[in-house]
Image (cartoon, rainbow, N blue to C red; front, side):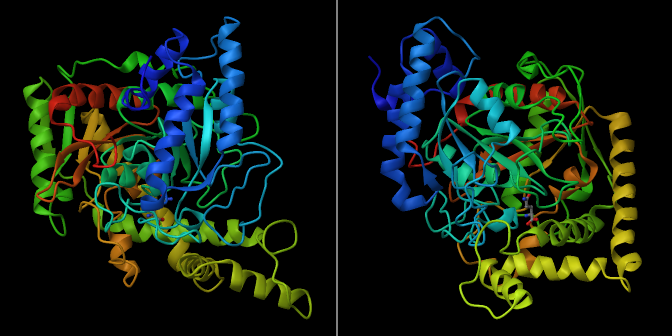
Length: 492
Ligand code: GLN
């Protein structure tokens, strides 16, 4: 008989195996995590919705199927958390916003549907920056999420609820979404592992859109093995998303190989110049040297275009957001202002009351760059810059299998620090946004700790659809870093 604590100390894949071997039931596992949610939620606020009854009912159903000899996947019966940007039928899907504070979708997103078909148990929906716009999870209508490593700090964002839940061990693993870094940066701030897959790898059907050309769903988990297992389940072609890719190279767990011999790794020198914390730099460069020791060829090079990534990203992301968020008008679903005089007044009041400051800022910025006088000067120019950034990465990938960099210039910031200065917050995305502009995959995993004991993240990028190279490199590094890995004080 395993104690709740012993159950929670297992990775998702290890737990899945014990459930399949009938050593642990899914109900026991679900209870173990519900207990930890109970222990930690008042401090961290990682969840918007906890689905206690539904989760236990589902776990019981899964246990019955297992007893009948069924085996749907290596994660059958494993309890997971889902970012509240992903639609789930008859379950509140708020996107962290007041305007969707009463939205119960009539359908389930494909990524979540794939998890359900694999036998995963959903514990609840996690907190996030409103409409996934932000890097701190402070802009949620449901209050800020706190970092389990230090409750005075942010967990990162926008998938901060998912990251905090994994770091506090109040779920076995989670799904996040990444438009400009929202899986990788909170993974980095919370000392966990995440993958932003290649654009098109995972269907976006049922993901509430922020920047449709940039958005991707991905795993956030205790280690790269769990991430690979989850990605294997959620990826694949979906006729409901016209940008979803039809490929058969989704056996990501086959890439979990401890061997980087001969692998070529490029480290962009221009990522280590201004504005990076000394301790982040030291830890990331030490990781690069570790790869050399492990037999990889490590080379420093100039990537170029670095300073243009943030402006191009924010123009494109806000332009797409302003158009995507037009649908929230109080007519079809979501919040509607209680008092209004006519239709225009209803739109105006609904949107004024329903959206928070950051979302309004981005709708205004996006509408501006798309307006007729400025479209060429800003939006079209940003698209050209995006093409040049893509060229810079393509050139680098002619030489290297992996590009290695920090995830963020700092470790977790203090709560409130970036609220007064949005530009500063935007600048924190300098190493992550290019990955979305170019569509390539990247892994974020812990590589060290600063003097305050806060985790430092390492980013490993690979060429389009070559998640396997990044997974292999991450697995090899993780093996060498095993003895140094720490958990947040709330984990136990
Ligand atoms: N911080 C970035 C932004 O605010 C990225 C957010 C995301 O990836 N969803 O746009």
